[in-house]
Structures are given as C-alpha cells and as structure tokens.
Image 1 (cartoon, helix red, strand yellow):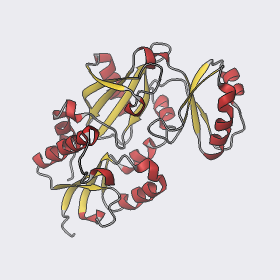
Image 2 (image 1 turned 30 degrees about the vertical axis):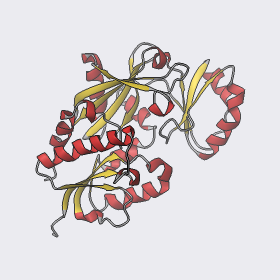
Image 3 (image 1 turned 45 degrees about the horizontal axis):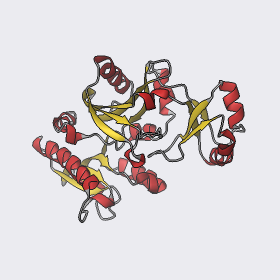
Length: 299
C-alpha cells in the first residue's frame, strides 16, 4: 500500500484558506480551525488544512478528512453531494459519510423520535403532496407554526406563520412543496422566552455549551439575523439529554452540536443536531478540541 502523505486533512472552504485582512468573524474561524489542527498535531498526526473544493488536491493522499468550516456547501449543494460521494470512496470521513448523508435531511429528527429522543411536534410535507396551510392548521389545531425545508441551513426559507398571515404565505408554500420536502412545527414559545441551548459533544462526551438568544422581534437565533451567543452552564439533565441524543445516532459521531429547547410542554426537546460542519465554539473551551482529537483513531 502506498504511504499516505497526510493522516488528516481539516476541511474548510475557499474563502477561509488564506483570507486577506480577515475580520473578527473570519479570525474566529481561523482560531477554531487552528485549535483542531494543533490538537491533532499533538496526537502525532500529520495534518494539513484544505478547501473541500480544492481542484488540485489528491484526496487519496490522506488517511482521513475532518469536516470543519465547509460553510459554502449549501450554495453549491449538487457539487457538494458529488464531491462527498467521490471522496468517501478515497478516504475515511470524520464524521462518517453515512452519518453526514443522514444529517443533511431533517427527516433525521423523526428517526431520533423513534429512538425515544423528544423533538417538537413535527409534520412533514413531501414533494408533490397536495395540501395547503389552512387545512394543515385546521387539522393540527395550530395557531402559529414554523415552516422550513427538510434540507436547509442558515434559516433558508424559514417562516413564522400564524392565522393573521397564513394567506400571505400560501403562494410560497405551494411553490416550495413542488420542489422540496418541507416541515412544519408549532411555534415554540421558549425559543423567544428562554433561548436555544447548544451543547457540544465530542466522542460522546459533553464538553461545553452556549445559549443562543434571538434579537427582540425575531425568532431566529442565528447571528446572521442578529442573534447573540452567551456562555452557558447546562444542568445535569440537559447534559444527559444531549449525550443520549448523540448515543442514538448510528454510527456514533466524533463531534456533534445538539441544539435543545424546552418545548411547549416544558420538556427538553432536540430542535436540531449538527454533525456535518457545526460551529463548535472551541474558542470558548480550547480543551474540547483535544477531546475531539482523542476520539479519533486511524488504526
């Protein structure tokens, strides 16, 4: 067998390979990727950092790739899917390829629910199904819901719909369900009242957490929409819940971000699990990158 040049390639996207005059946002990315690189080097691995879409890199020259800041993939989705399929035949993926495939589609929430992990009530509308928002609201006895695509990121086509604006959203809903599977969930009031907790889990073990709060007047906690992030110390119940959710995944992820809330019944619920390229806030807990590195065994 030919000797590999690298043990692990840390994946980013074109924008973050050699950025000129990086702003605070890009500096955070460079710091976080640097912590992962340093932790892997400390374990003796030969590592480098590349854009996933680098046309000149031979992916068979590394034993593994680890996904970190590949944050343009959704804008290049078809290219990304083809790249994943091709490169998964050439090297080990961290997280594993089959887990990434599963995590890209929010039907995974239904799979988690079947394994005993609480999620908010969720209704899926598959491509081509004939229905309308008014009928769904009547059937579910909802007064307010969130609509979003099953394959999405950064709150793309995410709408807060209630009885006062339901007719305004009907045209976009009809257009969307012709092209892609959608999901609806009753609006979770605690997203605004209490915020969303993100728990980082490395190698199955909780390491640290943040609390994400939407800006006044909005419900989206992403910083793109003015949301803010705060350091957070979770309860033992919250930690156990996040670790249980990760343990329900097969194969088990090396890294995961578990986003949880208190649902409308005041029960802990997973609203999202990110196991592809989540922001993991290593800058708040650098030793978490070491826990991640320890979970990786290339033998």
